[in-house]
Image (cartoon, rainbow, N blue to C red; front, side, top):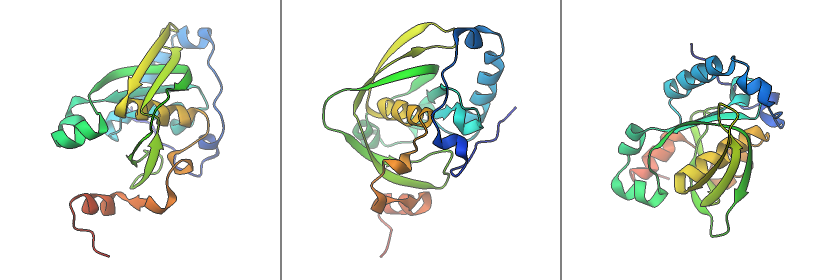
Length: 187
């Protein structure tokens, strides 16, 4: 069953989410929630969904950048964004470390602010310590677009949205961005 994605302006999107306990993760209710979140993410479609985006103030997110999404990009665009498919996985109670280096700047959108995008600088490489869906400790080292997805979703868990990090003069509709990318935006 698909869940409602909460939109910008909802208070749950602007407060830090609470950490889950091991007992909450392994109590048996999580698989059902993750299944519903996955259905919602794929239906949207999107590459990440954080619990606050479905109204739950919990340090929980799912990530999946499907091969068919990456295949829609030109090889040049995929290479520039360092975008490769990322298998479905869960992050719980993540601790994010930004790796040193020049930031990567690209347009970014959000399921909680549909129809819009803006240029957002993000760290090109990150390290994340978190739990998986079985409350097992895992570590993730990511770069490129995957690092961007992790930063975006972890921001949601901390009450931050991409509009807080964007270069404000680049904020645009997805339609205008698509036309500009095709070279047909007129002033």
